[in-house]
Length: 194
Image (tube, rainbow, N blue to C red):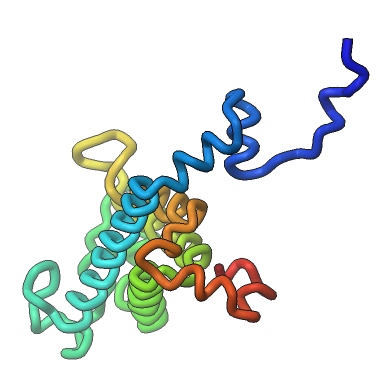
């Protein structure tokens, strides 16, 4: 019988914790999560989400006649939130309807779309982008309730989880400026900017 207690080992976080819990070695977990296929897959998802956010920003700003007609574009005096929020049905309809067309909400929404999209495109500020992007997606998911095609899941919820995961695996380091960004003194001092 060993004299070493199970509780004497330091607590592990991240891939090491998962490896210990499943009995796999940290090296095996690192090899999988750091493989070229994994890194480029996560970078690809990051870039696709960047396009999703930046496209929504551009369409609301300029009215590219897809979701937003030109006459309702923000630059033409339209509200980027009124079309969506004023048509919310379900348990949160009254709450979201009260926010529709508010200048503060319009600015927060548009700055959020732009900031999250740029952070994802560049691979910088991924933690902040993940937190704010997940919050935005969760709010949009609540506004979508009840869902039409699934009782619980739609793309807003999937995007929220993906954003958190992308920050966790440092997806901005591949095909992005994440490594350079992480070395900046300000980011080292305030890790939430990573």
